[in-house]
Length: 139
Image (cartoon, one colour):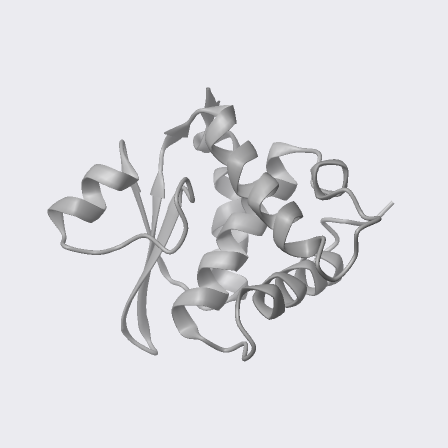
């Protein structure tokens, strides 16, 4: 089990960097989504960006997640990415919980705000570029 409280500062920094000023932690994101009649962008993604307006966004984050849940997100990324690059192993590239949570945050941000044209693979490419820029993927 991964406690996201350990990564609270990283998640709050991402929130501020991307102008998401509200962060809400919930025990179960799937249950929360069902109660609020919202669909999740990707199964097992432990976050959901709720956009009321451009200036009013809330990132809802599951407070604890099973490692397998986040591993599934990265495996799905690897499958999509293999269409573009069948050499890069995404499980090795995103080999820490910090990197994986950064990916999840930015993926949900890109999906919810639809700033990236071209579908999921384009979103993934944008997210990886942002992670590189932010120093998540550096040496």
